Image (tube, rainbow, N blue to C red; front, side, top):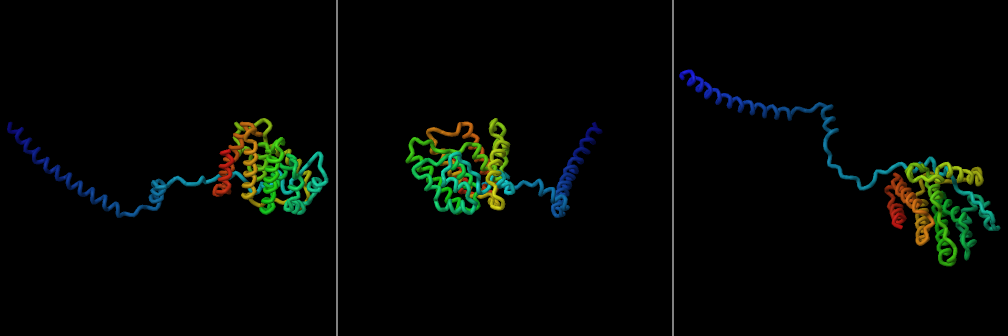
Length: 288
């Protein structure tokens, strides 16, 4: 019994001492942590902390953009002037077809082409030719006149010639304009939307032949960078064509899906992502 009593007294004496040791240990730990805060970090440690630090960043309001158009490849299919071939051309049409680039610009500014087709339907090859000229012309003034000419020809055909079928470019011709701006066909359309008769080789062969026919050494011109104004006018014309064919679409459903995909894709180009005007016309085209 005496031994048990001695053990109990030793345990009682040991517990207070143990508690005091914990108190002293806690104070020492707090002092050490304060001292560590005052110690500067090594440069490599600061770099690591900055690398993995959380930052309060919000989602950007604009898409960062993609490289769709290559300025170095502008005009690889056709340049100004674009070749035009008609099976039965009258004297005025032959004059236009054989004009030099400077003479052609003067004829376009004089509204001669609009007068040539007053009261009759403008041939579809001429309408496509005007659209190609509109896309690649290096003068905004001439491009604006080409747009006005096409707009007037389309409206006159719709209101005066009720039995005539309005013109509308096919998907291949629209894609060729974007490819001529330096875009790759496989970057604008996924493989699932490719058609058996819609490959780059077909477009390149077709427009390559036309370009050889119309080559005038030292006279061809093209924009040095992506012509945003021209692209805006081209989208306006395409939109108007689709509106004219609202009841009887000239493009099949698959072509319309491919066109919508292409237009959405090119709108992500870094040169266009901040262009509000082009974005508005692209949205208008998609909504139609």
